[in-house]
Length: 450
Ligand SMILES: *Cc1c(COP(=O)(O)O)cnc(C)c1O
Image (cartoon, rainbow, N blue to C red; front, top):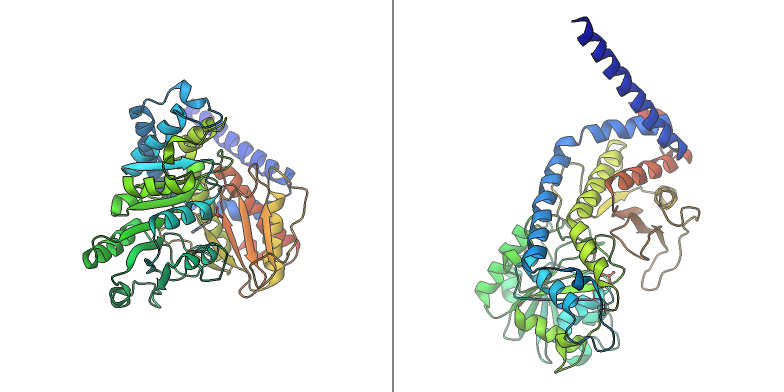
């Protein structure tokens, strides 16, 4: 009895010592005891939620592993080719692995696809022909696609090639405007583009289930129309992907979720054999298609990044939920809110004034493993009508699966926050940004004691 009591006392003391030690580690990186305690309490309240995220990541980890094993990924796959890149085993096998994960007939996964916008442009331009019409039934697509489509005139846009564009906005409650969509589909409608993530818009992100409902509705009206999903930021957030819900193509960037933080460049298109073949012929050349395209030395980062991607996505997701709960508790408008289901890794926090947005971004920058000593400043970015502030201290330049934040300096002064290749770093980044708001007197430290 006496011994048991003694054991308990020692355990208790060890626990207190560990907590104090942890607080000390945070303090060494500039986090005050108040911010630490406030955030620690919020973190403790999220354990149930985090368990569910871990379960999704576990299922996705097994899905990725199965695809790697089934396609007999070998040591030789990690090597690269040069020149034309004929018979590049690693490249061809990686594409089979992607097709296995997304349950599609084929895949194009290449470092020659320079970014997400390029991958989307490629999928559109190669699968549409002059006279065809492209339809977006979920409102305005991502900013950079405006020039691809020709909504904003640009050299080489779809519009220049005689491909027209129609758009049906979501209803005010975020629902699909089924009647509007039915009216918009005509004899020339060839391809429907559906953006999963909200991007910088203020609509909700679409779940795979809802995307599936929309595709089923469209296919019933016109079975031969191609349905493409812009899958950016959505990969591995759920256990199914849009291609499991009827999409003919899903498209994304490797410096977001599926690159796992390791891919230094690249994009992917997964889908029907014919769609992918069209894209390959456009990427390289008619007749050459997937046969060329040397992988140089890059493939081990693609493979290992993909292997890590379910866990990395889970880390980013936890960071987004943690941020939502921290800033919601402090009275800021957050989207999605602290308890909503998640279908992408983006978190928006509105500060209502420029100082708040700037302080938040400064905190994220200061928390970075790279360039933590620099201070981000708002600047006039091409294509934006207000100054934009960006915080990123990433190993891969511009990578937004790594901890990063940005926002335009205009009402409602919202920061868009995403990424964190480890949960621990995402957590620290949020704490550091809160500290930055406290240090500037934007958040009063006695509020943290509540
Ligand atoms: C990031 C993103 C893109 C474009 O990707 P880039 O790699 O920045 O060119 C397109 N659509 C959505 C929804 C995105 O989040």
